[in-house]
Image (tube, rainbow, N blue to C red; front, side, top):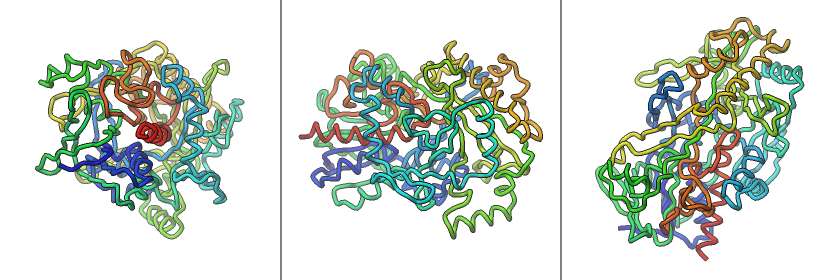
Length: 537
């Protein structure tokens, strides 16, 4: 049996940050256990390789939700990272801190010390802002790249349309005044993906006091009374136990972290007993409070060339590949999500309620051997898409069996509130107004069904139910709060009711942030590591 000071379960966006910071002094032995592989696929390093990993079970858990009545009985597809770097290794790279009010809402919900001013300082500490001209601001390990000089020319129509409607624009959605049309900033450096494994874990692994083990499925956490002391894990055909002298930190993500607590006896007692698990602690909120962003995309054939013209033909692919190989620039160095921003569907609202995406490409899913890949269409096209930013519906993630390898039971409970349904209509009408501008109407050769431009409010909601999907931002299933009766972890991310155990990942968000969740997850982990080290003194 091996012993370490800290055991981190999960080498994802949060776990990699924790490993670096907890090991930096050299005083603590840190073990990182990752269920996935090492992440050496070239499609991970390539920013636009997202299309290749989206359905790849070698690096992706490829989860499915339970059928949702509110979404026409459909099962949702939930890709999650199964690799060092976690979901940040296979996402679309958009770096969005969130709106200041998001974090003030955290503090108001009982997450004391997580207000905007506090987290803003942490963001500043982890980031290096890289300008389009190569200039740098900040000294953090995580590069946030301004790619406004590289985006496709067709994006100009989106900015012109926003201007026609009198909507604001911003140079940087990560500034405090972040509302409006923007070019999305992304995590790249030298044209390669800059996820948390590259920014944080790679430097940490150069230290003798850090051990990373991959392809290790943690099955449960062991307790001595109410204190977490060990981790039982499956490595190949062997079961191995690792002991923690100080703390165990669960950083397995919003789907797996609550399940691991439940497998270890912390969760709704009735659920645990139904699967033959003896409850250590009846904690009904473990797995609850699930929140996610849902979006729908509208596809249009374009009257001028888009990325389809570059990336669909074989010759275009070869040219883009050569451009990237020699310069680390070009379309392969970018995210599929090039422009968008935070917007108010009604100017009277106190803050933006919608996040929009404008992509200079349309695509379909095509089979490739035993897997599927995203393939650009053989004609010019573009996408406009929206997601309501702060949904009020709440779902659950639970174990489906006592077997740690069994798939999760994911029940998002989407569109359960009238407020959420109203925001769907508001987002669709905002996109409809944008499409009616001279700037975007002139870009349309034809709509690819359904045609947003002719939809009524009822049509917008019905279509959203039929076609919407997750934007891959699940949070909240191990909610942070001061009240042990209403949350899973306290504001220092310690699991209520036990000792020596924390949860540090997006599952602890009390409320979902308004935009993409990878940036706040890394911020949270960096700040959490500081709390862990404070408590160790």
